[in-house]
Amino acid sequence: MKKIQQGFTLIELITVIILLGILSAFAISRFPSAQSYSTTIIKNQFIASARLAQQTALSRASSGANVLLNVSEIGGQWNLVVSGGGNITYTAQVDRGDEQVRFGTNLSTACSSLATAPLELTFDGDGNQISSQNLRVCIDSVNDIELCISPSGYAYEGTCLP
Image (cartoon, rainbow, N blue to C red; front, side, top):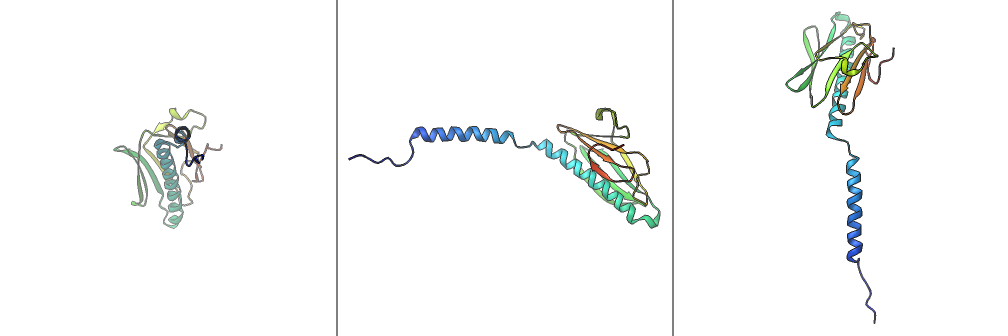
């Protein structure tokens, strides 16, 4: 009488373990690094703060007071402060990591040649920038990201349109 084989052989089990190891090594390399998350957080916080400053300026149009967005680096963190009429409306701190934030109105130069923080951006009662030029914001890191704040005060990700 023949014995019926039940289960897997040792060779089959080892082959499956090796294949799973190869697949997992490939899959892990596809996960984004913590650095890319840090850059995204800085980008999102900067856009949110600029839009908040614009909306705050619009809501205070009757008072005639301008609203300021101040961006500075303090103790390894980016400090974003929205204030108007002497009152601080909003403050956010974001870990700096290895990122460098640069600002400028020159749309054709390399990001690395733009000025670094601090930045003070002023919005009038119509939500417009006091400056009549696009403000280009570059976040230099592993994944360079470019933002733009248009003269109308709208902040968005991408290159500034002339």
